[in-house]
Amino acid sequence: MTLKTFLLGACSALAFAGMASAETLTIATVNNGDMIRMQKLTDDFKKKNPGIDLEWVTLEENVLRQKVTTDIATKGGQYDVLTIGTYEVPIWAKQGWLLPLDNLGKDYDADDLLPAIRSGLTADGKLYAAPFYGESSMVMYRKDLFDAAGLKMPDAPTWDFIADAAKKITNKDKEIYGICLRGKAGWGENMAFLTAMSNSFGARWFDEQWKPQFDQPEWKDTLNFYVNLMKEAGPPGASSNGFNENLALFQTGKCGMWIDATVAASFVSNPKESTVADKVGFALAPDKGLGKRGNWLWAWNLAIPAGSQKVEAAEKFVAWATSKDYTNLVAEKDGWLNAPPGTRSSLYASADYQKAAPFAKMTLDSINSADPTKPTVKPVPYVGVQFVAIPEFQGIGTAVGQQFSAALAGQVSVDQALQSAQQLTTREMTKAGYIK
Image (tube, rainbow, N blue to C red; front, side, top):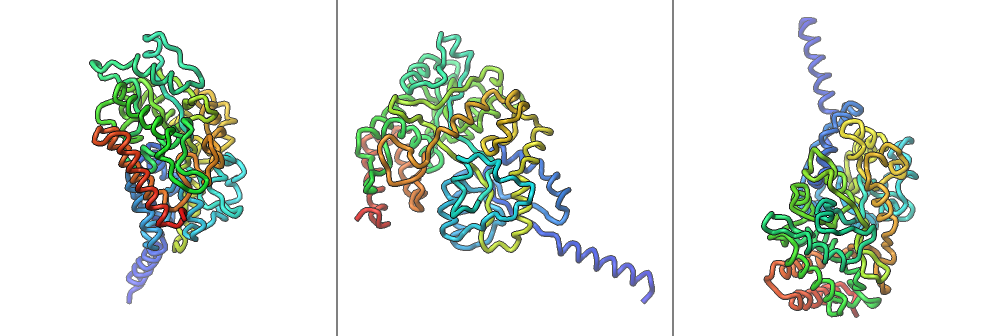
């Protein structure tokens, strides 16, 4: 063997060893704007972690939930990092499906996480998911349409005011609809909105004995109000609209009001993405005068499934994507307006962020006012504002959401939808042993 052949062989072997040592993390995430932005910024992560490659599986919200839940419950091992919501974290941690995030690095500063958000991701004193962005919900509205109609939006509106204003600013000939609300079926789609709304109407999913409450007048009031409002002042095809569809409608000037996640505030205020960016105002989610507003509490979080073979690399990615440095990276590349909101106290203490984001205080107030332990007017046996933190809720919530979406589409009456919701929820809760 010549020296040249030996050296070439040695170099090839070293290159192969280097390739073999590189790890590829498969990350399952939702197709929301903040996650899409994160994917575009991962060159920063790769520079700091040259031995780690990233493979993305980006899915629509309902599909993501289904695939991730199936994979983790069957120990499929398809994903190294999961994007999951506040609902799943304590349930999956209790099942032993998630790893505690004990090694996010000395600079991570978990104490900077907002207490309301952090508490929902903690079990037995340990953090089981790191929040990528947190949110409540609020009213986003067109100030120009309100001015033209002689209306003034209160900081804390009532549902009656919202309904009246929606009708007054609707102009169907110009394809301007007074209000856009979620109608797409799903426990985290239309039922997130409707559950939070129902709290302010005095409704609840279950009484203290876990008996479903869809046969009570508060739910009938909620659903009638919602369906009638959307018929009079909502866009056509509303039963197919979720977060992303309504965002697109609002950004293109077709919605006078939109009640949805506070995280949307930066998208509707961004002149690069929104045709009405300079015309948007914000208000707290509405109430009915019963002491509860119709706002929720949620975070999209990054978690590591138990049994992962790439824990150290996954921890590095989770720490990078949810760190203060990542917030600063977004601010540097895309401006402070687009910094992922609702997770860190330091963001809301930043003068730069407060200046760029007129919705900052409203967002923080909305997050802090949501109480998962007392979500409704009447006592309940569950935790969760826009969901019920029990494993059975995914299936039940989606089935009820299908009934309510059908009522919005006019396929069934409100009474029929509520009757079906009562029957199916009673059946499933009895089967699961909650109702004796």
